[in-house]
Length: 68
Image (cartoon, rainbow, N blue to C red; front, side, top):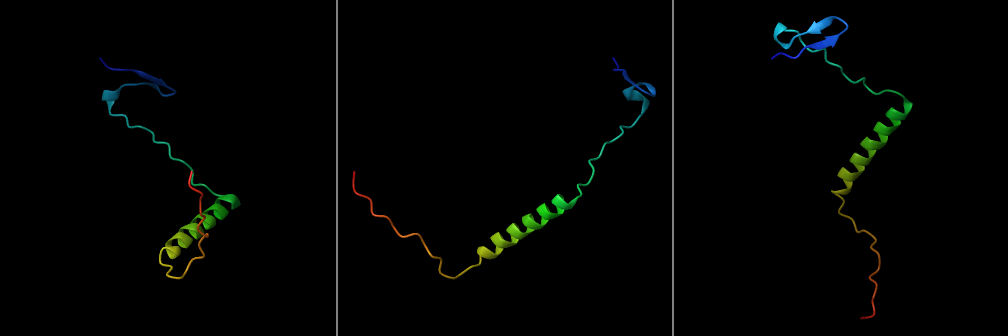
């Protein structure tokens, strides 16, 4: 049993060798998209460089808790 699909060009049978019409997304553009890309690449660069940091970090002082 073949499934018949109705479209503007008439019925299309799968066995007739018709190919699909693919729909592709548009490439994003605009000022906010460009800023978002810059911020994203900046954060990636920051995280990459921080992984090689050998200096001394200022740590939060240890808090002494009363035993409960």
